[in-house]
Length: 123
Image 1 (cartoon, rainbow, N blue to C red):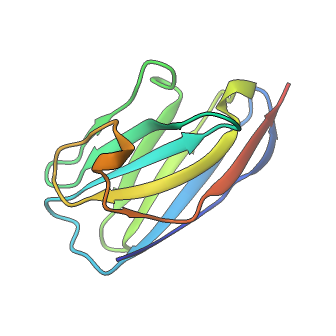
Image 2 (cartoon, helix red, strand yellow):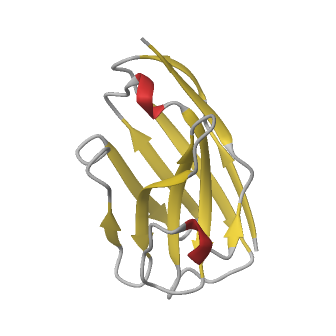
Image 3 (cartoon, helix red, strand yellow):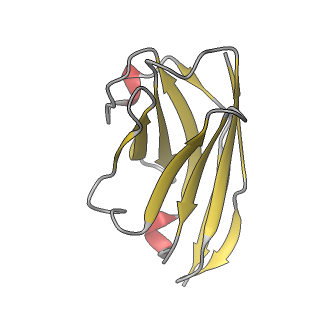
């Protein structure tokens, strides 16, 4: 399994970014794919998850209504559309795959990770 995240960058508060996670080496059904972020000096925090068996999506309150996760199974891609960005959204964003269809906010539950992509939101 390989994951490669991209699309990070510097954006002003209120702006938007779309992150991409290119995946390979596994079948999408019966897996959960999530985006986590890690701010300097903090632990890894889940910001979105999609259960690819039924495409259910989950978000914590901190990003609900601003972030949208989607999966293009034909292209083996997972996206995170981030709108109305805030300085507190700054961090390194990682995509992770769990070999179960249920989403989890615990990073320990994920079996594979891509390298991160840095998102910096300026005030």
